[in-house]
Image (cartoon, rainbow, N blue to C red):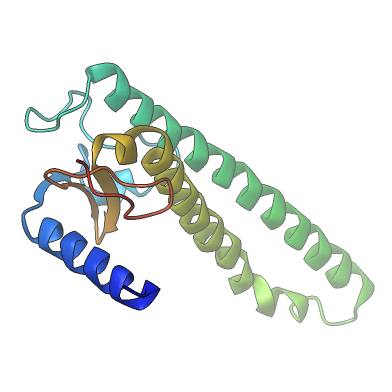
Length: 165
């Protein structure tokens, strides 16, 4: 059997297992507006009952996401301070005081990019360290997160890996 046939067979087994997956949705505990703020906590304080992990692991997931969001907030603030300083210097150096401030909209870009990247990095870390070895996977959803529990398999550090024996 060639490598292509092995890959297709593996894909077929994984896709069958994915159809029998259980899903646990993590909804923000203070509403989606507050949970999107970098300084807010992620998910409810108590572990959902149908999530098969320990309360310590659930708290570790919350701590990882909070730490990454705080790092993103600091990075975005630093970038915004640099851009604002450049705009102030450009205002002082030009005869048109309003000219450089027409580009103030650019201050929103670092906030969206930094927080989005931080959340993606946190999800990858949580999946690799906590969830994938237990056959679970954290996914971003619009205004929530979803933990998918795959029945009868273990996931690799990056994505779907070997099937459990």
